[in-house]
Length: 307
Image 1: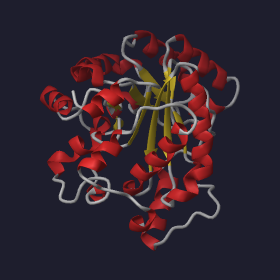
Image 2: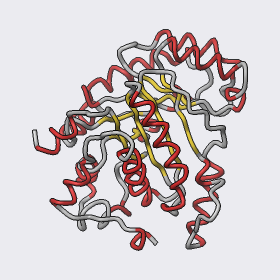
Image 3: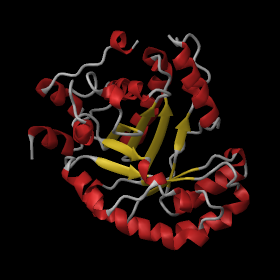
Image 4: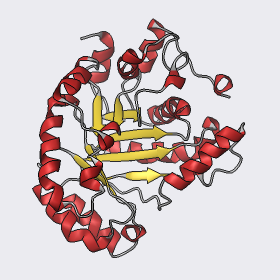
């Protein structure tokens, strides 16, 4: 185990931070060293951040060989948080697809200790009328495999459905995914320096759910998805608020998983860095592995290089 792995595996506070993906060509030369090959993206990503949303598993199920390769390419401290396949989450009710979900779980167990919470993203049409279906699905879910659930139907965010959902999730130690799309909707003074970027911001507004931010924790861990504005500095007030909330959860003994997105994923890593630094100012954290990676092969983001 390298010194970096020792530092990060001590877990002064169990905090994991990452992006939605690990492969983005726009990271080469700033987040990744100049000349990084595509085959090395995961390895370089895991030298800098500590978790990733497994969004690729929503569209295609990886083979056992692929999963074992992911393990080989990542250090001990790294966590994958794979999204359940859309054939399970977006095909109507969940229970008719329980066997498929359980097969997916068994396959993903090949990640071993690198398997973080799985992620069930329910579509906007999945309403509180299907609470009984969700209850049966969670009762059948293997308790030793952590799960987080994201709901998008607006009725889940008002009473009595909000409390009913939270109670159900708490019963099964299932996390409630907290998605924050305010940065791409409400940040005043945020700059967008090109027409192309403005189109991407508007597309993200259409694609991402416009739901209330209700920072509740229903499990032994918290799972936050922050959809950041590409003007990295404009995110500061919201990142400060999230850092305060995450510090509270960590002091309570919870594990926190934080994922930073952006309409152009080029900007996701510096948003991760900004959130990490704000949290580290509030609670003691292990050093981000990014620091050592930059000492070995410098690849620095600055606001000037991003615009």
